[in-house]
Image 1 (cartoon, rainbow, N blue to C red):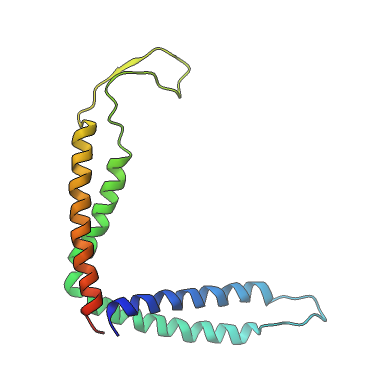
Image 2: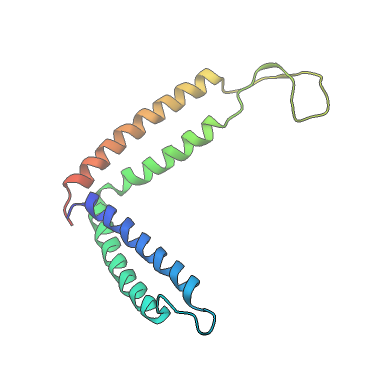
Length: 144
């Protein structure tokens, strides 16, 4: 199984656990005399078995990804930085703040211009794309 396949399997296991947890919450307590479609005790046993399987799979994925953790962490932080920069106010010149009562314009000066910000974002997004391609290759070719 490749890392890519293992990640898909991990997501399926998580989904299965969440579905069984939902069933436990829904069917643990039913009105007396009503049919209980699922046994909470059986579901809890199933959840524990699936959780063990999930832990084993996550461990294998973790060990297989050790050589590329730097790239994984860099990718994550670059995505956070891009999100932060895209929300950065780069207003300059006369600006009327629509959230204040005053309709008087203020003069704003940005240290980082919108063009500089956009160029930074573009550079970071190019690096993100490169890292993602490298990780996709790793995930498709690395066996666990």
